[in-house]
Structure formats: C-alpha cells, structure tokens
Image (cartoon, rainbow, N blue to C red; front, top):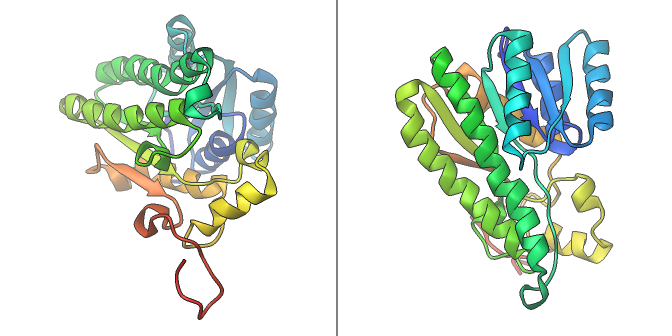
Length: 260
C-alpha cells in the first residue's frame, strides 16, 4: 500500500496507460480522480475500482482549457481536501509526412500534449505549494529523443514535455514537489492497435526485448515515481521502452544471425 491515504489526479485516465495507472494506484491505497474528455469510459474505470474496494471519481476535462483544468483540481480538493499526485498523461497523435502535415493538426496536438501538460502541472503545483509538497509525473515519449517519421507535432510536444519536466523540477524543489517524466516506447494501447500489421512488425523489430510494452509496465513506473521510494528523484525522464533507446534503430533477427 505505497500510496495509502494519497489523492492522485490522472488525466487521460479512461484508457490505456491512464486506466492501468488508476487501477494500480487505487490498489495501492490512493484515491484517484480520473480526468478525461471521454467521461463515460472514465466512469467505467471508476466502477471497476469501486467494485474492487477502492475510491475513485471521474471528471470530464479538456486539458487544453485552463478553466476546465482548474475546475478539475478544485473538485478534487473540495472532495478530498488535498492533491498529492498529478499524473499529466492525456495525449493524442496525428500521423502525416512533414510536407503534408496540416497546420490545424499541429496546433491540436500541441494544445493537448504540451499546453495541456503545462496547465495541469501548473494548476496542480499551485495547490501542492499550499500543502507543502507533492508529486508531479508527466508522460513524455521516446519520440521526444528521436525524430520519428510522420509525427512532427507529437515529437515536438514530447520533447517539450521532457524539458518542461526539468524546468519544473528545478523551480519546484524548494516547495518539496518532485517532477519526473516517463518516456514509453511502443505500448499496446488503442493508438498502437490501429497500426497496420507491417508497421507493428517493423516497430517491434526495433525493440531489443522483442515486444510492445503493456500499459501496466508504465503504470508500475508511475507508481514508483509517485511513492516515497522516489523521494530523492526529480527532473528525471524514465524510459520504459524495452531497451529501444539503448539499442538504437536495430532489427531483431533469429538467434545466431547477428544484429541487423
């Protein structure tokens, strides 16, 4: 019960990484507030948590709207008296070649993936300063380190999240707030399940461990960063990537054939 008595807000909490993290946090004793534009899906996760004996609520929130983000945090504090953990996880993607990437989609992706993270973290941090401390976790990506083709907006946003995480960590340390990022590689979520089979195969070949990650793999990293086990860790980006960044762009081949 590493989060016993803690209150955690998780954006993008209805599906994938957010859902897995909400379920895990609740099982570790936290009260979780799932923020998502898909309120119905978030409520389904809340029902699952309640059936397991946990505590949770669902709140509709567009993370790119500062008024909605403030209302989200205000509701959490009104119901539970505090906010100990903010997991700014909500994100979207749009795939298109750079020369054809629509401006509207550029703005849309940055609004959610970068501005949304900024707003959630800023509003949460202001509450945590009043309390005397807290934990902030952001969802970055290995795309924040590499120029992955056809995802210029997503890549730029995730690189920005990594730098924002460092900046927040430096400024908020004096308030006893730690700030860290998680950088997943290919995780088996709704976004990646829509990939063509050939694209999934090529991406899998680039991962030394030879498989996509599961949402629970990321959730366990978030649990570590939210817990007292990580009390002296801040400004760090933790890759949950099956060795992708360590191995580079390589192709797994049958044993004995050597590297690609």
